[in-house]
Image 1 (cartoon, rainbow, N blue to C red):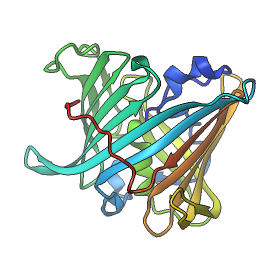
Image 2 (image 1 turned 135 degrees about the horizontal axis):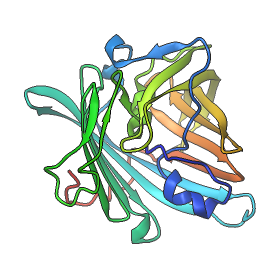
Image 3 (image 1 turned 120 degrees about the vertical axis):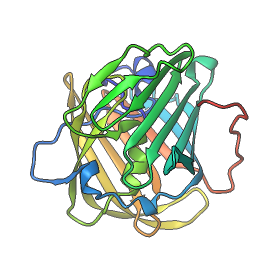
Image 4 (image 1 turned 90 degrees about the vertical axis):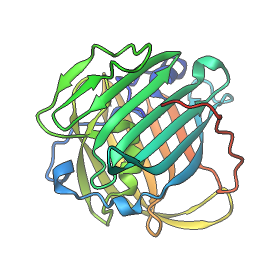
Length: 271
């Protein structure tokens, strides 16, 4: 899930920057800090496979209109340079070619530390080699618009584009609050982001299953606009079930599709 730079009032203006995630608040309270070196993520709970989500937006000023996307995330366990890694491919399908975007991320299985990330948005490629102390544009990737990009880190961080996968590995429990050191590749600087377990709820899924979930909440303000993000993660399977966001008069929802949903993943590679 991509984390954009800002949250603005008009939904149509937001869509290009809000497809992957609203930018959450920075940490400011006593919390359980989630850092790569501490190995607090349970990577065994991240299940490989294809997952599909219905994503839709609504603006309070246009209550009779919805904008839809189909979001595909496919995670595999592979071997890269002699070590086990998660390789996650993302595809976003909208109403036109400008809405379509892809992502491909590589993370170590042992601690979910980022190794590589690339994304193509509006036809522009951004590809990065990601280390504990820096991120740098991948000069071996053709037409990489970020080939000259470089940023040094003071400590290792997690890939914000994979926030959903990160949430699925958290040790969620009643009353827990987490600060996660996230970075959105190519934008700004790493930030510790606050997420609070505010309760639990039994959710009815699209295939009529009842799933008991933890509710993970992020809320704050960006350029005068208040926003909230709520994520429902199943207690038993550690699966992301749904998300509800509100920002600047707009609303966004993500709902996990049933396992039997048709796989429309294209056959071409985005690596």
